[in-house]
Image (tube, rainbow, N blue to C red):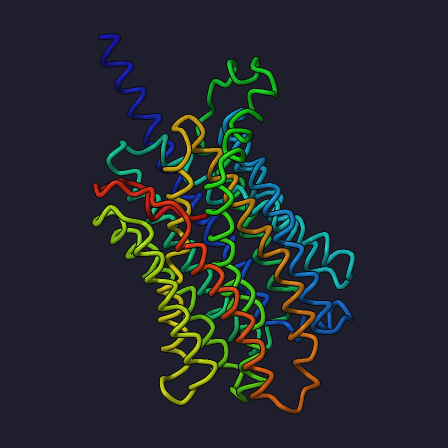
Length: 422
């Protein structure tokens, strides 16, 4: 009888974690909307914060400073405090960041964006944690792949849906207040639906036990190569498509606002297709490097054509192909897990997130200073677009080089988790 009661309790607990995971998906969707939507309101944000385009880019870039650092903290917090408090606090911080970002002050803009980055770091990690507690082992990879797709759809919605709303007169402050309220509601739903966990043993362990897994991960050269590779692959999509792309297509390619938003929204839409597809291909053949190298080569061809042969293919098609191919940026997340011991795989995810977005935080200001700053003042728009495009192509070429020297971790057998992202 006691066994039946235990089974019933376990099933009930699993169902509760699945319900919380569904609300976690909304958290992850909103996080990507918040990450990508500033690209469609650069001029409005410039007016609100009383800064030029470079100043807006600097404010937006602070997101990645806190996102990268907090990625290391999120996994530890989940392990030591459980999901109920960690994820709820994470989206609560995200909500506060949105409210502050609606205030017309540079200081509030910086603070709000910093908080948005810190809170967002709990979204994907939290969803993975909830899925691992709610689903049977054979369904976890599917659940994580679905989680990833939901996030990417949020990235597309942040441009494709938010862009027309802003263009048709929705005040920027109203948008950020509204999405902050949505985050606050999801925060309450997560808090009241996520089961409590007994973390007594974790609380009694020393803080050194938290640091030890990261020591193992960061002692492995493959971890750095994985993080550098992932960062170089995400930088073009993050810096160009999700931040500067709309403005560049408007100014340098003379597109209408609606067309520029549509073209840039094709990249996250491509992720929705490419991330699970390329992860599945890598799993099926049991190889990582050949899929990585092939995907990066397609990225280079698609973006090179967009920059140097713009009349050959419609820009939206080029950006969609680029987005699908850039789905290989998720494969380094599998490589770092396979290159490190089983007992530190959770820390490996935090480590690669930290490395990935540290690179974005470093490269973003360089691109903004060299090309974003001159966007409104250049008279040679074709050359300006090509120069900025060459910067993106150079980053991708470095990624191609690293994909050739990183060690193959595939076994030739199907290994779950290749589609795990961030």
